Length: 345
Ligand SMILES: NC(=O)c1ccc[n+]([C@@H]2O[C@H](COP(=O)([O-])OP(=O)(O)OC[C@H]3O[C@@H](n4cnc5c(N)ncnc54)[C@H](O)[C@@H]3O)[C@@H](O)[C@H]2O)c1
Ligand SMILES: [Zn+2]
Image (cartoon, rainbow, N blue to C red):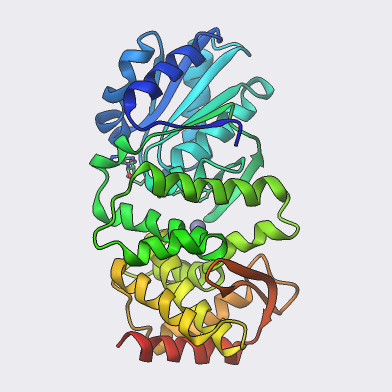
């Protein structure tokens, strides 16, 4: 956590950015067209001498081609090894900027200024950087910590509701694996504000798990709760006319996986009910078609985290507790999908 700072308003974030960048030979700000429009004006004053590097927004541009653009700009502005790259954007900009900075001249420092809820509570924390390659997500990348991560909810005012909810799925996931009181507060709140307290609690959880187990040998796997089923559905929907945002898929994954845990007698029925109730408040949970259930079964069997052909899942065992590497068979997935359909309709 030592590299992460939280800012109630933009003024202190700007102060820290200005101070930070004075230690470098030059500062570069990486943004996409949306963060250039909505976020750069909030911080530009603190970085008047910085060069702006813009890449196109979206997962489709999280590529080596975009890294070319970044490396080209750094090279032609004579960035040396004491230069700093400031990643101002969502998870795409943080992942790709971290990777590009880590390779440029064998590594220059980078700072994350995450501007989406998902990037604040997930992508900017834990040191994973990378780009997609040949349709494989995060195929090329490396672990490297940001010199600093500066978090401020002021950026979220321009983010659309769907993106906010997508980030909220990861917040709920963090609370579910490690913080019953925080989850309870979400259950109780009539109208949620995406404020610093909510974000900070989620960041502390992500940071705790990644620091305790950087190589994902044991407890870091808990962060994959909801992701075996969620990823499978996300991949399947990619090729349809109704793709899901990552968090939307993870919300469905958490619901199905809570039911798997319940039916393995690992999670009390009451707790599974609490999970579904909260998820239904934020997400329009869809009924899964027979075709989708088959796709989930097939794709979850290929999950990178499996041991051979057996699915290995991170499941919750209560609100605020988890188990990792739980073996889950095909029939259990199918049945949980059917219970999920019955539960939401
Ligand atoms: N490194 C990790 O540990 C980790 C963890 C989770 C996710 N990720 C990665 O994060 C990426 C997803 O991140 P994301 O959901 O932030 O997507 P994103 O970066 O594509 O941002 C979503 C959209 O919001 C726009 N945007 C960003 N900030 C804005 C703002 N303040 N106002 C208005 N528009 C804004 C962006 O231009 C983009 O169009 C994926 O590539 C995923 O692999 C990485
Ligand atoms: Zn995720």
